[in-house]
Length: 596
Image (cartoon, rainbow, N blue to C red; front, side):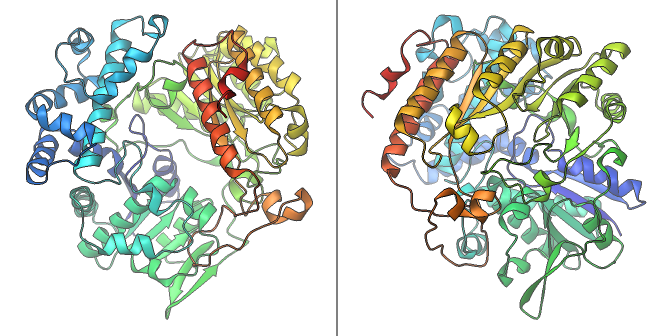
């Protein structure tokens, strides 16, 4: 059986999403013919081309943009300039035309739409120092404008790294997705279907597996499956990835199976191997006679992580990925700028006790680290295939001991690699370990500081102290490693005073150079967390949830002061945006809450 693994629209365009390279390598290691394609990148390259610009211009001539659609109106007035420049700009962001940096940085060549207004807000010291970086920032703003014009002129659901996200975000009912799929297709929908049909014609698969890691690619995944069914009716279609593994564990809506024959949960290796060989389904939903049922199998254990082969990248057009630099903050830019080969050192989380986290799910609960020597062998193999020396470790939290040993091997082998990844801010990250990691090529880390409050950190069973986290962050930063913090507000019982104090801690860390970027998210109660599974233990009262048979993860609960939390969140984000650009670092954090 021939298997085709697809990444649907839309995900970040600077590097391949890691699911298909990992699964392709695994299936081939088991003697199964497997190929892969990235339809997310393919869609962006179609839209960001002379052909795509002409299509957008025709649509805006036929249907002029509404009032307030600033990007579409600007595009319409400068369509000829966009048509002349779009393909050279894409080539520059792909690294194929570095000679254009001076022309772009000179700011006389590209049309500068609404997104360029941000440049006037930035202090002079936040501007990129070198010409290539400055040009990448300007070229990225140019593409942001073009993406906004596509959203305002072709499809209101379009975003640069997400498509129709609202249709899949916390939606218990499949009806809105089904209506969109069976309604009149937009121009973007037609492009997706054409790309899916072409991929199937090239590969002639018997099984097509589509990964849906995030809500922003779920609609794209279903649109792809719809096209596959039309092009190759006898082909088995399978949905897997982070979204179904988290959101669809109670799937009961038979309409899903008009598009996908199977829905796979958790690690996809064993389920896909069985389906490709015609064996008994494992960890798989299927629909028989209009009734959805789940086929679990305890014997279908995932392969040990350390025995997995290195990811493979043939079939993916590596030189065509787009490195975007939408921010001048060097830490924040890492997510979208640069060619990062994505690897996982350890499956799952070695702590797995946080009360708010999905600790009952396989991707957190099953901790399975690879030996450092195996991780190094993967890096060598991937570097040999891709030619790219940058690595992003996509672990839930990379174990300090594993990072220490890997650093020793990298230093001893004099490898040229640059790498970064997610950690826990623990005492194990001493100045000595931080220096060793930096010497081994570590350029950045990200970690969760959560509420940045001693009382609530203990309440959520985070397993770190604020003082210990600060010491780890300072050690890493002093070694020359960039540090990003994930932050949380609205945690149950968290007070306004604690929230203000948390921002003061964040300000102090930025001012001390121990923190380089940060992101605040509002607490969400999820069904697979200890708090969601036993809310009464945490003093929470669940509210009635709408039934629907599709997605279930975020749980509604009685939350006093919801409007005040929204205002607090806006103040936190506004302050942190300024801190990331060097503004307000020596002012009391309370100034950001004057109107809250």
